[in-house]
Image (cartoon, rainbow, N blue to C red; front, top):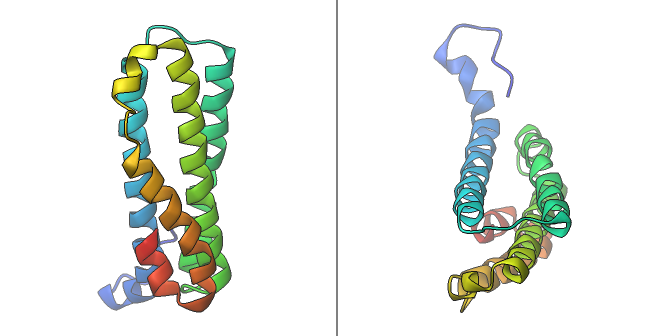
Length: 144
């Protein structure tokens, strides 16, 4: 997000779309941060597969600032919005892979992941949001 060159409040108006996309992304990363923190506190053993799964998650999360900027700078054009959905979908999949690797090392975590309804609903919504980005960006944004 770039600060405007002018010192007036009206100079902030063109930055609003960028700020909104930044805020959405900040919330997503905050949710992942908190869930990751709680997840890692619950395990006793980490191995190489967990570390690679963790890096896989980090890769997808690291793309969120890029796609956030692209969405904000292009005022909600379909391609950036669809890619935003792809990045969120892949982040969700990567997080699930990390959970599955941790479950192999800490079977007592299975109670925490017993139903997985939230993860399944999120995945379906992300998958729906991608093609919807080409039909109606606002519906796509609501789905993500």
